[in-house]
Amino acid sequence: MTELVVKELTKKFGDNLVVNNISFTVPSEKFVTILGPSGCGKTTVLRCIVGVEKPDEGKMNLGDKILFSKNDNMLIPTEKREMGMVYQSYALWPHLTVFENVAYPLQIRKVDKNEIKKKVLDILKLVKLDGLEERLVPNLSGGQQQRVSLARALVYNPSLLLLDEPLSNLDVVLRDEMRTELKDLQRRLKLTTIYVTHDRTEALSLSDYIIIMDKGVIKASGTPIELLRNPPNSYAGIILGDMSLIRGKIKENNEESTTVSVGNDVINCRKESKWEENEEVGILIRGTEVIIHNNKRPVQNVIPAKIKSATYAGQIVEYKVIVNEQVIKVPKSIEEFIIPEEGSNTTIHSLHESGEEVFIEIPESACHLVKE
Ligand SMILES: Nc1ncnc2c1ncn2[C@@H]1O[C@H](COP(=O)(O)OP(=O)(O)OP(=O)(O)O)[C@@H](O)[C@H]1O
Ligand SMILES: [Mg+2]
Image (cartoon, rainbow, N blue to C red; front, side, top):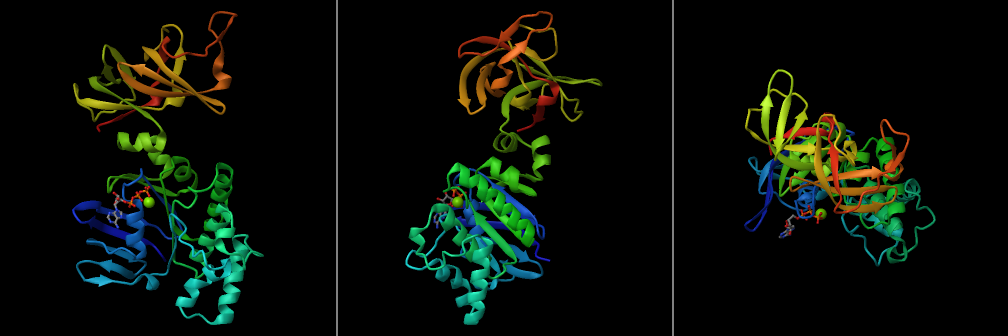
């Protein structure tokens, strides 16, 4: 049982409140990701957990062991915390070989020499670095250095693995490969893991649970699916789901529907009784479900809009569309350029250009209302 419980963790640097009273649990054997933008306090949280930074307030337990408790004046030193950490910049020793780097945590724990050799060689095999034991670290590729760092974190069977943006220095192809390997390793070894990233794709593809941070606080947490389906606020919808936010006012909330005024237009949203008439709300919009039409259509939720820009990214063109002076991102597969128009035999090549006036259809299922 290696569940990590963090309660009311606070860390200041001078007057700068970097981690502001956050609480979360990492269940045993689960993969939990902390997602947030640069400077929001992710590394500081990890450094408090691993024990290289002393929190100002709070309490942390790993299983039944207290790591830190402000009230009980307890602080367990790093080397007694049974954690392995891959630092953001790998923090390997350039003058040491691969073997020596990985052996280091065992040496400081005074493990027997033969035992060290066996453990290091085993773990290097696991991360596919066998044969490179004697190589100096600067003579390795970025991906290999990343693996050395991972091997060093894993070599003494940590109860908790902490990974601080471990893939951000790798090229796209290697990053994809390492992501799969990491997840595979975590599952096989049943490691309780905290992974820090600012990349939504990494968070979504790796995690059992995601914690979304901003400016030292937790804005949302849950499983990837929960957070994608029901983001509790606009911050979560935008950072994780790449949704767009437009502002409006509840027009009607009756037995049948919840409607929102956006300028002179009205959008029907999924019925939710909690909203009051005239209440200001945000509509989070899942752009993948939005349809761009050349002409007004006699269906619900079709409103005038203007193409702001069209940017190509691989097989996708991402439109930015202006609605009532607000921007909605609408990604389209290039396959969708050719759409047979209803009631006609002709085919419309609907590739849109910036400045073009269009109509967009925002299906009810693409809308999710939030207060803030
Ligand atoms: N030792 C320190 N002394 C003073 N300020 C610090 C220290 N360490 C971090 N900070 C500040 O705390 C804030 C949070 O830093 P932190 O490294 O935790 O962010 P982060 O979310 O990991 O960012 P990134 O994604 O860029 O790595 C930043 O404003 C940073 O400048
Ligand atoms: Mg960081």
